Image (cartoon, rainbow, N blue to C red; front, side, top):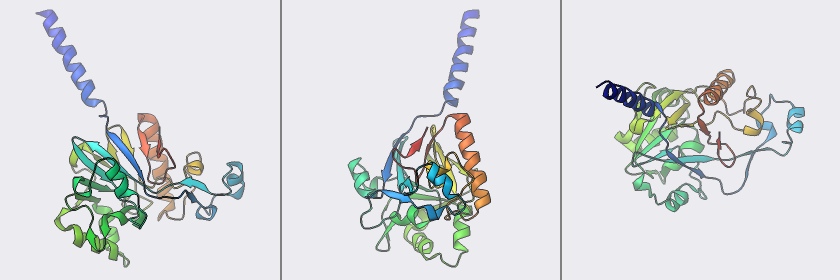
Length: 256
């Protein structure tokens, strides 16, 4: 009887340990740009020329425009949708991985800049006809209050009741967790999926900002908040062992 009790206790501890361990999820990077992409020196006005020279970045910082596909609980989950330009690689890469636009179940948006939502629409209609679209309500409301919000209005009309806004503590599909990462935009959001973080635009030039997070690209709307967010997310990832996937990271599109 005593041995049985010990066995049950050990089994319970093991079950708790397994439950706490991050689930591994397959994440497939989708580089949208066909030609190599460099972030130019002028985009980082606060960083000194001497630093660019010391890092060998005079010609620009290697970058990309990416979305990410996750296979999660039998569902196809897309994080952002890139530019949607005429040479966009979003749909070809999805097709290469056996996924049609109709196969995408959920789309999570990190923020509402054009190079993250452009691929959601084509000729004024929704590209992903069956997907549920998720946007942080802080981000959505902030952009709807701006004068230049035509793209978001069109997106709202095209996706209709399949566009969902959420609060950070809401329960999201596939166990995905939304995390506050404000600064780049008013409601910029990081997503935790399994043992990975989809970090959007916390860095535009990894070769510069990884070791010098105090410098911002001009795309960041609130530089002070962006710096604080960048440092916090990077420290959290280092402490917890998360793999970071960034929409402007160069190949292989993640940091470990």
